[in-house]
Image (cartoon, rainbow, N blue to C red; front, side, top):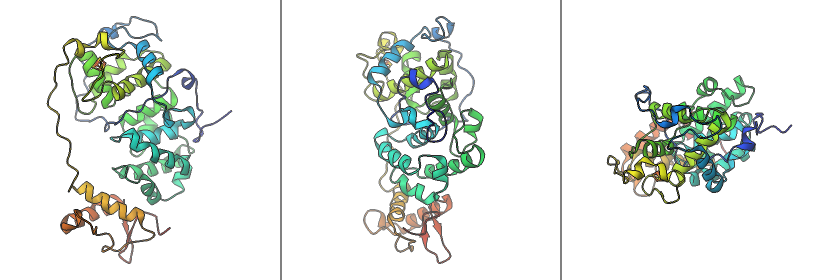
Length: 353
Ligand code: SF4
């Protein structure tokens, strides 16, 4: 029997019958613990229990229509294929956090080529993980994936576990990522709610254009809407996510031809504007930009660098030595860079190429 890269059995029935797994264009941060965990007092018609276990819950989110949409429009991405296994799904979910699919794709492919199993990554240095992470952003995710690989080797025989408590115990794995891996890699029935799903839920079911990270309330509501049969539940969640990524987008929802259009509460209400969105965060001149400049120098270096080597020499970041020092110190504090006994700086565990 064929085993996936991490030893988990691919397919597991769910793969054969479930449409290709979607990947939202951006994933949210883990659910905020500060948000209410109380279940919604609003219960849709979908919760009435009508319909069989594999059919759609009656209501605004029709599972059969969503499945047809996903079969017709769902994207073919490498982490949706059965061969991705638990490890491929975990890697993709961590990379997709707040990062568009187009930027993730080449890094994901290179990552899986180099480290097709958790054991392969754990045997390499964390610095190589950071180097391969490249310009994906939020590079601490690379360190956490490396740390997760070490835990998988030490505690799970090099395999990605399928149960929520074990997944949640892994470094860098929060409520969203744990459920996404359990559902998409192992066919477990869990509500997987990212910002795309939240947007569809808000518009189609609640009739409002809410935004911001998904909450525990969203997760509870999606759980009540899920078909009871696990394969159907995974297909439902996958299609909902893809609909949010491809059609029900933030600024330009394509309602014409949407499988939910004739029951969408927001469309029926005339697409009322929601609260004003926060303007996009500036990038130019920020600490994130400066940290990125320093990390690029470290990634490209053949060996340890002096502080002078690490001082960006091109505008605009060379003008502020105080910011540069603060950013270098923060990279060292985060473990993304290490200083040796000679005062030279390199990626962690990397002595040269
Ligand atoms: S009809 Fe429009 S707003 Fe409603 S779910 Fe579809 S794309 Fe989103």
